[in-house]
Length: 393
Image (cartoon, rainbow, N blue to C red; front, side):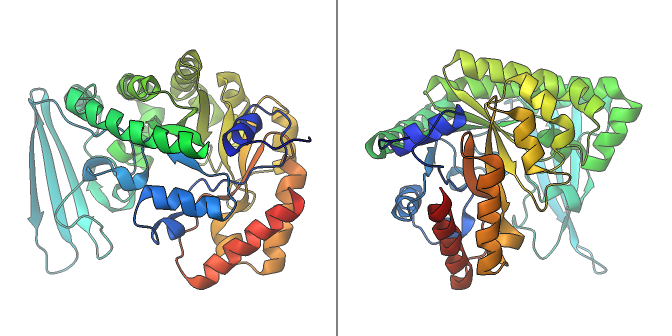
């Protein structure tokens, strides 16, 4: 294609599987660089200086001030005023202390117990939603259908004050995006990732087998709560709404379970985004091939997190052939093993293979799903990745 495209135009064209002037490169997460920046705006501008097709987000991880949901950026969570919260520490001589938390609601008490290991990031605090909970919790708040009524008191529609703060932040974000002509991302939506935080992954799968009606009800509670938040995000006007689904692949769920517990809410959320004039992105980095037809049928515009190395069963060539021009693919190169630890030759080969198998139409190149290591050596490898992209884009 001849003619220059702005970054926003290029990203939207890629998401729509249209012809682009060149394949865009946008890091889905770039913690190593963000840690070197004093603000989200500096982070955006430094990526632009690197030549990346970055985006601005109405809800970045660094903008989350509420430790209740650091791994779910978006409108700040407030519980129903009828909920009381108690937390305390149980000291132990023979192992890590145990952090206790109780949510006291009119319909019962939800309890969480977490090992306060040396790497626990919240001294004296237990969040509601966080990846750190899954391997460290000794007790999860949702243990059966008897806990679901109490959960409804925690998952209430966004509080007007929090919506007001979110809108003010979104206004600033959109002003920066307009100045720099960048894509605006909104979110983050969630489905059964939140169920994993509430139940524990193993117990959640057991419930799906032994008490499927309970998981259906839990999925519906989360869906209705997510819809209320999603509507507020879409109302500010975003180009792309993103739902996280790291725990929604076939590493955990069979295709039949996915169809029953996840597909219905995903389809309705995609429809809502499209009605608001936004595209819909879905993060799923592993165990994707067995549910790819469902993701397509739901109408997802871009699958985020195509990982050829650590993504279980991921076959990039077959994935592109299966989705054709119906869905864009974002990723293509493993972040940790290939970019952070690989040789220059391995990085160049990985970039070439990603563009050859996934592009050039409908591809947004990215390490999957993050570059975390802050060392100069890793940043040199990042530059190798960018140079390789420039050579083949």
